[in-house]
Image (tube, rainbow, N blue to C red):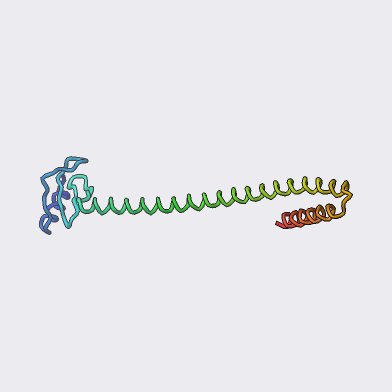
Length: 142
């Protein structure tokens, strides 16, 4: 150990530091505890005491929880966007299906009106045709 390191260690001890019985896990040097911190006299690397380790691990745990919450929120937003997109797609598909069905019905009713001799039946078929056309108009507007 060089003289500067010994002087520094002595300064810590005179200020109230404690020489620990354990040695540094990195270089096997002497450890001094001063104001809650533990310092290796040989490699000069500080080590955390148990309170600081717990505080650090609590902080890491809290940051991980916050990150998980942000990720969940992000995932939820993405799922909602996907769901909204799928819902809109399903809605548009449904409107297309309804449009096709009504188009077929209009063609059928048109044939019935053309072939029907009875005016009261023609009138009923025309009412139905009118309703189908009205529905198609509303679908086109959407």
